[in-house]
Image (cartoon, rainbow, N blue to C red; front, side, top):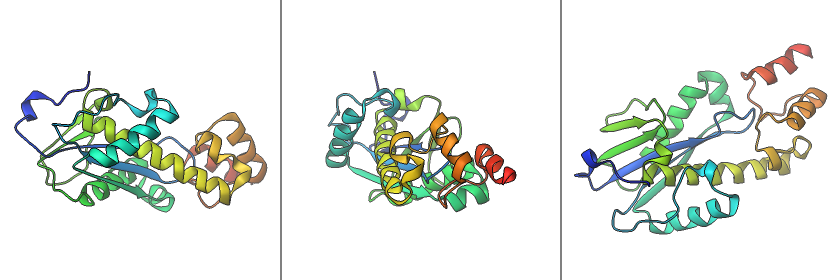
Length: 199
């Protein structure tokens, strides 16, 4: 059961922040920030990875309609290669919170680290299974990133991005070895580096 943690219940504007796309070999990393209305519980919120594609898409629309505020932001492949995936993820989270139309009084961040900022905040491991606003953010981030990778597939159809979303599946690695990386591959990632080293 996803709840608001009791010790932060005094705050009205609580944002949840989560990311999608740290593990893939290609595409941007995406972060979302969501401030839910405590009076409007959205049934079915959970870690996006535990939901079907159809359920995620339906919940994404509902979150956008019923949340007090939400924002989605990205850090691109060049930023990931330049500052590393952890720092790029923190940057995307900072951008998402900065883009919210309402300023949060408190922020929950999924995971064991949080960005450097002036907000009162707490990092929670498996927060997307514990906190409604983080679960909502995980859904928005995942749905948005999947849409981005489907668009990327249209640009670079040989890699199969629409299917594996950039993750290092056997098929993705096979094509990567055969034709090399595209401009949206993360050159700092081991499997991509290996291909470049061989070439």
